[in-house]
Image (cartoon, rainbow, N blue to C red; front, side, top):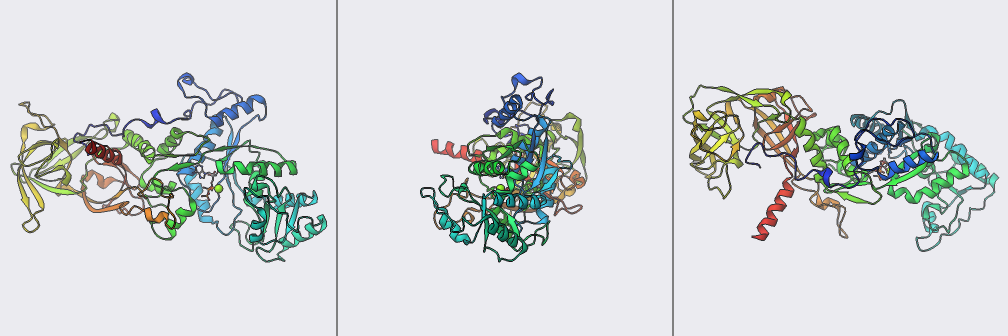
Length: 606
Ligand code: ATP
Ligand code: MG
């Protein structure tokens, strides 16, 4: 905790100075479709990222004369901050090159997908500030077309119906070091295949009994090309097509063709699809249809959290967190409820840039993005998390002064407000030490401290609970000549602390959050262990009754504030009631973990 209110509020260093590969910020649109993005500051800007460079080259070479990207979520969970990276990338690329970006739901798996996720995904993309206009597509809208294409491949002798069970298919596939074996059904006649595939569609066969497979090469070094499954029998209701289908195309047979149907020019996906690219190419070549260019980039990983939808779903289902929008979750809705702004998330995505190699970004970088944003825009208020009562003995009992406080030193237009001051106050317990260590410049017996926007006070007497010995109240005196923070005789105090007038205080619940996991990479688990072993038991601390300044009675759900010297807080959108706000701590003023580490290093040196 800082001893002076004017201490800089952002963490050590600006992440933008250190992060490599930062992409240029949004500039004015290029003069023509074929030009690279540029604006007046072009000279001072970092160079294009590798994806932008590919696009520029494609436009110059004439391979494409326009840019059309898409964000293709599978509606089987809520979006997380990793998806935000992909959303920002796809939509801003389209923006920069005067192109378009589609929202496409890759909904090929009826058993895991739900309407609820579709709704939530749209809300999140919109909240991040992006607009897909009328280009909301669903892979399931292409099911009929995909079926026709499958028939075409059968007719070309490039696909066959296979009766191997899923386990047998796996066995026959071979390994990275061993070639696969041909399926005994590989050489069925075109007529037989057409007949069987049609009967698969009609529902004559049980789940898992038959598949349609591409006839490529069981000896290919790329396992994805070893006769991959195109269709499986699955008698399941689909959230959009209902019971119309009982066979469903695989993701791999759907994704590339969906891009092709939509006229996507640059199909941007994460690195794990690099090995699938030859398969997508094979389908497009065999079908002789329009061919987008696929570009792979590294997915975002963040320390102290996880980015897997499967694990996030598990955390929700097993109630390790309080829903998808639990403010500790790395989901977009969790970050939103926590108090993150879309601007901070977009800046974060721009800061980390795009790369071709997997890496893990420190959570501090994300936290710094929201600190920086809220430092600019959040009004300052005073609130006390762990109150200690102070009685100013020489202050008249019935007197109340309305003292003037600055709403935001970063933004003079935010103006000033009045804060009531009276004889009884609360200060932060941490701001008093009976036996102060060296360099502790706050309150201690006989010592003087400055109350923010008010007076110097001196601690005259410490009152303790008779039984427990706990300090329960401080008796202080104030110096009326020090209003505004200066003493006429020139004497100095080093510390300034925040306070709230006791009779005027509004009572709020405050929720303090810490990392969801206690380990930087919670998926790095020894044999027999589980990522659950690393759930941080202290990731949530609830302070049910915190005195905060009365101006906060006006606070609306979603409003964000800086509690002076403590951090940024956001009024919870779910649990706040009129007159009884709940505040989520968005982030501390500085990175306390880094601070603790620094202290530990310091101690080790001593
Ligand atoms: P899973 O958790 O099952 O691997 P997914 O995260 O790939 O699923 P999708 O809905 O398929 O979920 O993702 C939609 C898009 O977001 C894809 O283009 C995917 O590449 C991208 N994406 C997903 N996770 C990340 C991430 N961590 N960083 C960057 N992009 C991501
Ligand atoms: Mg995926």
